[in-house]
Image (cartoon, rainbow over all chains, first blue to last red; front, side, top):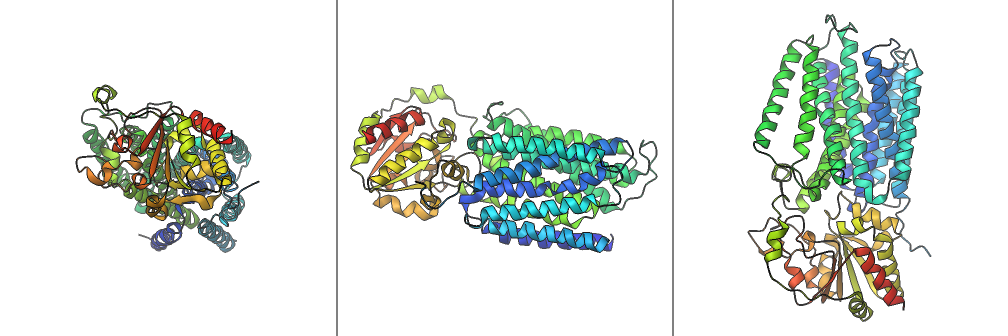
Length: 96
Length: 465
């Protein structure tokens, strides 16, 4: 067990508590955009995909990395865009 | 250099947290989503400066293709199809995490052809590689099945077979045993393939027994898994921005899962394993001779004309009929006549958390008349008309009184306390839980049969005439 791992576990646990605090305050009104938006954030795995896809030697890991880049990019771009499309529609006043 | 990269990753994480925090109000939510997207952009740009990247060809190809598909999906999806859209996106995120974990294993192996393992990896990296591949694969396959059910490509009803739970348990156990063998001897690369294969089967067999109306739980759970898979990949790569964001999304999905289960008064285990919704046999129900009085849209229009307060209860039937726009038109007509009109939205109405709110927002309903169950449930007794459109189980009084009912204990909207109840429905068939609805036979209930869109359109015509 390395020190690095302990740091990551600490971050993991603290992020979980932070998540509960922040997410619990989101009203049911916005639960669908919350799902699609947080879903886009989970596309952060794109960061790992980029490194795998760019290693330079044409091998299996580059192929897997490239597929991962495609999937994660769809997740990120599609997720943020569709969330924005939804949130744009939430208005308080009655449009005339 | 490295310190700067880490700090910029931290900035990205902070933007994610602030972005999620701004989702606590519809006024700031759009800005919050923008901030989170900015955080993502920063994280991507910083990663592209990584010196491990030697060749940008595949990266650019992947980014262009992924962006194209992402934009295309996001712009053309209908609001009624949002549950399956979110399901598909969840799946892609989980799948990407699993692939990254496998690619990292190949990099660590020290030999790209995998004939000999000359690499070095600590136990925690190996364990999280297994977890990331397992969770990521279950997420992508499970999400695709859930989306296929939601989109009507697959039958929505639960698919049950003998020894379903037992065989799932055996497969899960096999994954654990194989995982332990792999961690003990990481040169056994084929174990990862078998684990991924079993995870695919588990993704299918764990979602097919879950029925259509329980999909909000599945979608929330897959949301959580996709985050967890990302967090595990963060452990594999020792990348804290992945750990933080993955964990945030993991908890978000879990909280939504918990809210959905509570709103149905069922445990997560019951939703996942009980196969609710499978027992319903329409022929049995049809033999029961109970009569209801059928009313026409004209009758209903007369009642609405003399009402002063109306609460509308939308359900999944509204989404199926795509009736949200015409319904909001009805609300506008009624409001112009000086009536107080509001929507009462049950937490599990629709096929994903918040589904009804998005549909009604699309139809230009101002969000201050979209009320949660707890906000409006005490108002039904002072309300002239409760108008139920395409909802069933969430207004079934059996949940309060009938101990033998699968609905018993579920919090429901107190529709039957209103002075008059109008129910628009396609037929008398019971709802998802298979429980006949006493509300339909209540003497103050007026039933109108037919497609929600047709009925509401006729109502609007009557009231405008």
